[in-house]
Image 1: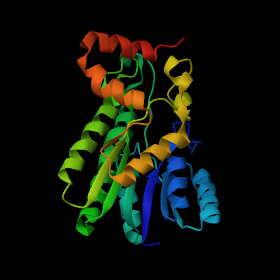
Image 2 (image 1 turned 90 degrees about the horizontal axis):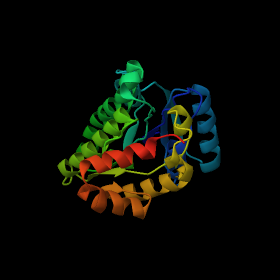
Image 3 (image 1 turned 60 degrees about the vertical axis):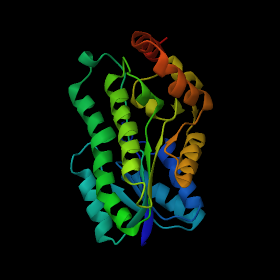
Image 4 (image 1 turned 135 degrees about the vertical axis):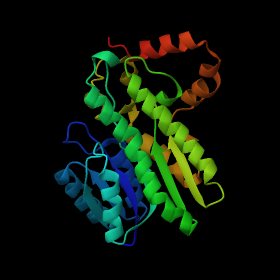
Amino acid sequence: MTSGELVYEYGIDHRSLGGIGLELARIHAAKGGDLVLVARSESKLLQLKQQLEKEFGIQAMVIVEDLSDPMSAQRIFERTQREGVEVGTLINNAGFGGHGLFYQRDLEAEQGMMQVNMVSLSNLTHFYIKGMVSRNSGRILNVSSTASFMPGPLQAVYYATKAYVTSFSQALAEELKETGVTVTVLCPGAVATGFVAAGNLHGVELWKSARSAKSVATCGYQAMERGDLVAFNEKKLKLLLNWIVPLLPRKMVLKISRQAMEKS
């Protein structure tokens, strides 16, 4: 395998490999693209590798890593370098959240969230982007959230990490606009994945109308192919976050945001 797409998925319960990352991998494989699949569950990765190779006739490399480990991104990069894999598409999909008052939440869990959602994402981007720039070709898709456009009481750290992803992605896209490398940030609303259970979000009103992971992944992948800057999976969310929320008083935004996260 001389080229591929690096897709990784982070599941807080150690057992799941699914959601948006799985659907993105399937979309890429269906187009004939090879894959580098990264997650913590080796058995799930091997099962997915076999399934995708059989169904689509592609090659998939499996790398077992926990992205809450500060050295994980470097090990992933070094492994692909040793194997001679040229990554032309990088999809930073890993992330997790958590519900509750910040001062009551476990600090180690919050630190792990920051490591996965921001630091490992940045590290992987830094490692792989150099090769893309030297080849004058490459695509990066960072999976963020509509949460990135406002503060998030009861998910304070998660919302802040996603604000970083959205800001970082847009700045990077501007820096790279003359290089042939594009950066797209996907900002979906609520998505029906294992994220709900992992983040203790059962009962939160917002997730009762969650969209399917497949529809979100399709939106993001197509936006990446077009080289779009920011992709929303729902038009009403795009309108709300770009044109309405910025005009509202800050305290009102905080109140609305908190109400969306409160459990019924």
